Amino acid sequence: MIKFFRQSYAIQYVVIALMAVALWIPAFMSGTTAVGLDEPVIPLFNLVSGLLAFSPFVRLLFAFFLLVVETLVFNAMLVRNQIVGKVSTMGAFVFVLLMSLTVTQTDFYPFALSTIFILLAISNLFDVYPLPNPELGLLKTGVFVALASMCYFPAIFLVLWVFIALPMAKKGTLRLQLIPIFGFLFVYIVYFFGVFLFGDFHQMAANYRDYFTSIKFSVSGFNLKTISLLVLLFVPSILLFVGGGNAGFEKTVEVRAKISITVVLLVFALLLLFVGGNVLMNGLIFIVLSIFVSYAFSYMGNTGWANLFLVVFLALVFANHYYFKLL
View: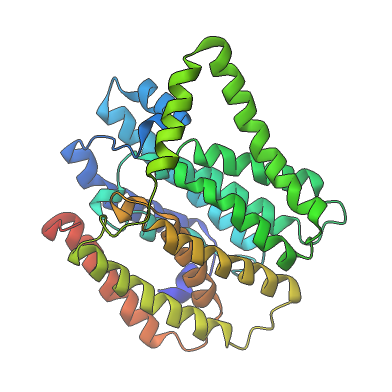
């Protein structure tokens, strides 16, 4: 199975599309509704959700369309940055699986919309490594982080991730580190100015003040089921990643730097699990693990035990969607 997705032909895309449809059918049959996290501080998500509010089916269809677009962006990002093979659908396969892992995730919710902007931010940060003049790419990275936080507000912490990660991309001067922050602030200044002119600026300011004064890390979003799932997913993913890192594939300095940037992102992904709400909807951890697993599957030599684990894991995922429905 792993060797199958190391290739890129029409059949691989058909299989991935069928898997995505199969994972989302229960959601369309049940007619789930959108779930918000601190809605007053996520204006972009509120806007899109409001436009789609006339039909739960259309909202789910839009969420599925988002997943398709994000899958293509994710796979292209990994191929372009040599994290998977030059001709591979491994990234697409792993991303669809982990981003549709549970019934809870097959819905339109803040992180689902934020994901496209987070992927574009990661992609832009990866791309600046070889550039002699990366200013525009860094500016766009800040803009994408701002847009992501307007859909899923805890993504605002990724500004700090960019600041920390830039030295790993050989772009660690203070001037370059400030450029993404300027891009981030530009988006919010435009938004605040628009609300000042056409909306209720005092109410908006109160919403943000209330959020920042009440924000705290907690374990309220965890329960035994989610902890078990995260352990089942996290431990094998890290073992696969470490094993893939020791594979015979000769990694360039550039690839190593991008992997290091992703490792730093893992720290932020783990922290975001504690910002409150359902941890399955704080999905940055699934993006990071998708990168790790795709990397490991692409370059490991002996795939026997990994294929066995993957088959069992797929069976459990589909059982959860169609039979257990525990998460």
